[in-house]
Image (cartoon, rainbow, N blue to C red; front, side, top):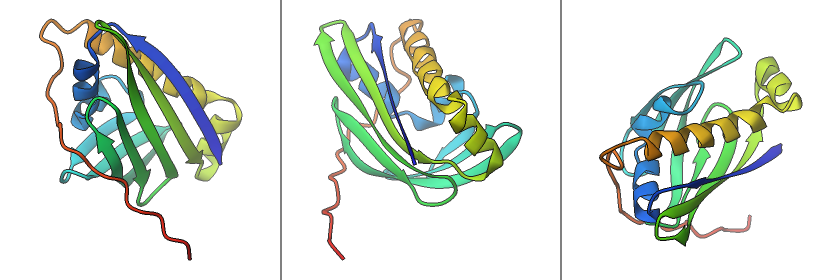
Length: 157
């Protein structure tokens, strides 16, 4: 399992940045290899991604979400991964976005991409495109979901 941690500073208010990050169906506009995301309900999404000529589909669950703070998720099927995106107010007009992901590459293409550092670079490039996507919008974020999802308690087996 690999852990990727990347950060970008976005010149926008923390609420604007958080609101945009909750618009999962917009991710294909700035995330390379994300072909489509369907929002099934408040906590479930279906993803279609491409990497190295291989298309994968998987479901993911939002495991924790708090407005202007964080969104955490885990995959339910397909490539095994989990992560959290946090937003931190730097000042009134600057927000730091940090992505931390744990990924267990599945298949030849994903393992090669991981070993060569391609996944690491892709996450940073996606964050850089998110920054440009949001900063270049005249009207701010494309939408918002301000609901809370509390983390489920962990049970020892």
